[in-house]
Amino acid sequence: MDSLYLLHLMLFSLLGASLASWMIYEFDNYGKRYTSVLKRLSVRSKCDYCQEQVSYSNLVPVLSYIFLGGKTSCCTTKLSKKYIIFESFGALIFAVGYLTNTLEISILGFLIIFIIFNDEKYKEIPIWVNLALFSWVITFGYELIENNFLPALYLAFALILLYLFFLKVRGLEGLGLADIILLFSISLYLGFPDFLYLITIASASLLIKIILTQKLREPHAFGSWIAGTFGFFILFQEFYVSAN
View 1 (cartoon, rainbow, N blue to C red):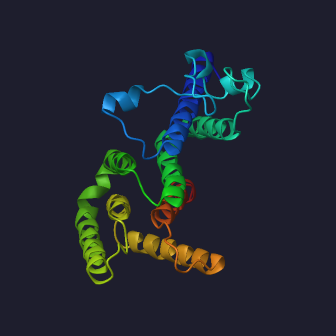
View 2: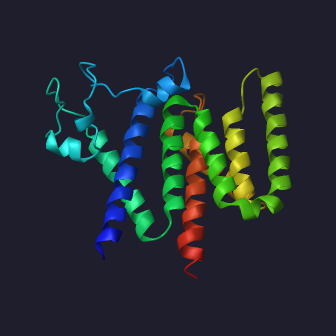
């Protein structure tokens, strides 16, 4: 392994850790209002406890946590282990993506993980994540879109009718619009009949969860199961089908 290759590996690992750190902030501050897009992009991280702005020298993912001994530099309060866990995991995902020449799968992995955590906690999928996933599909699956566009459009139309039916008859959303957008993007990539297999598996998995938890009347996130199933489909296609 030459020095340039090692340098690239380190840089991509740092990028993965940085993205993980940013997504932790987005997750913890979900629903927070900003006056402008520039304000959102330029907002500085603050201490979870005393709200003091974190210095730039302490914003290096993983390394800052280690050098600070797992404590904040301002009030010396113990930091949550979520930072070292998710930042290290982000670095690992991008390192593996670089080593296996599958960085596009690493990017998709970040989006899927964020959808799962956010949808399970807040029962919502942020619009920027849906746009990012759609961008991923048209970037890395552009060759498939021509054949898959009409089936995906039919599916989206049917789901919108289902959405309107539940809204009219029961006064609630049987399926969120964000879930419909998510399924449309995934269907553009998978095509027919694979997206039907995905919906069936995701629905069955959610149904098993509801039965096991016995929370029959509570709202449940469906987008997280859709995204998780899609992730398994991609991994299966990339590493098992390609190998055979």
